[in-house]
Amino acid sequence: MPKNPEISFAQAKQERSKKTLNDLLEAAHELVEGADPNLFTSRSLSKRSGYALGTLTKRLTSIEKVFLWAIKKAQQKKLEEMSQLIEDFDPSQPLEILMGELVDMAINNIQKVNPLVIRFYDERIHKAGNLHNFHHLSDPLVPAFFNAMKRDRTNTFRPMSEDELKLILRTTSVFIERPIVENESFVGTNEHRRLALKNMLRLLGQ
Image 1 (tube, rainbow, N blue to C red):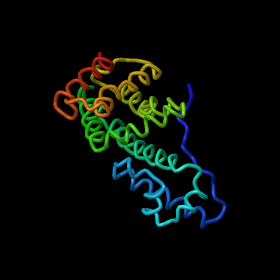
Image 2 (image 1 turned 90 degrees about the vertical axis):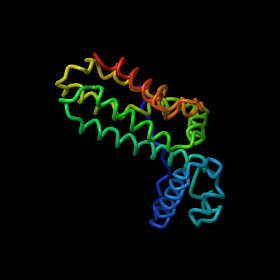
Image 3 (image 1 turned 30 degrees about the vertical axis):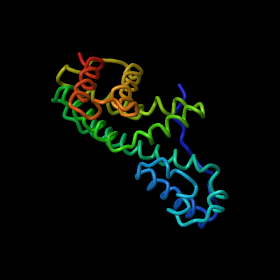
Image 4 (image 1 turned 30 degrees about the horizontal axis):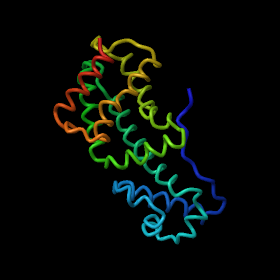
């Protein structure tokens, strides 16, 4: 299975060049936090960072790439928070409680993101042929969830291999993210939560 590759940039040898790259990445992160893909441009990045367009061209191999990097970093931060929630979960509590907390966190997180940002990332990752970069997004949750399954004292987690768990967790985007990207009317409602929770419990529970 291919690993989810890092979006990286050429390493600078001089401290000044390192600072420039860090400033540009920070500016891209701020623009992504604003959730307006219309601003994912060289001019917006130049204005936000304070660097001239010529500096951007010299330091970055691709303006698009820097925004993909920023989106991915934001995704990784949310996944780290979800992993921590799983690791801290009380093993004397049933699977339904854990999944309820995870579904609530996931829906809350995704509602903060402009669907156009998700489409921006989705379309460009697909265009580049890096489908694993998108479909394997949930893979970092597997170790924490697998450990939670082994620690479970309620007999509500269905025993499974890490490979099966990995495939099941990859389906979460179907229930959480895709309805938002596709502008479904029930997004963020109690019905959205109910459908996501019901189907994830079917897949993961006894």
